[in-house]
Length: 135
Image (cartoon, rainbow, N blue to C red; front, side, top):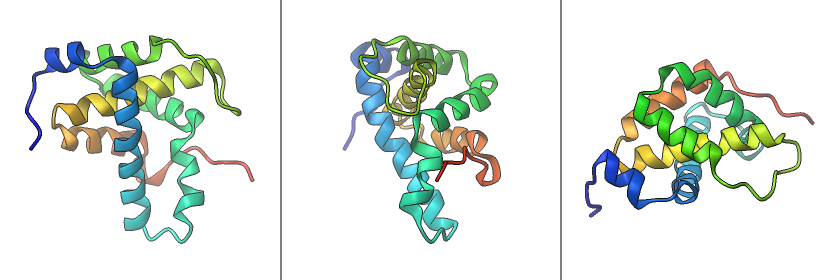
């Protein structure tokens, strides 16, 4: 059973990179859940509209005004973390915002606030609205 920790401890105990690493997995589960529930026939292809740095960067912008101050702090920490490589098809700014976005989801998971993570996911991707992929 996971121990319950407070907001300050979550921020102090885990690095931004650790939160983003965990948040990537949390976000992936939210995406997969949505695609399966929506009956998407090719979820692995459709997921690209959610999981790319460009898509996550745009999603971060859509939730920016809905974040609490603590959430904004975690997002900024993740965004400002050292980034050694940028994936193909993303700008450095998009990649930084995507990392902050993932750190936020990792933080919410660590706090046990999966409902809040789901709420922000729904705001970030309203009605299935997502970044379209080329191809």
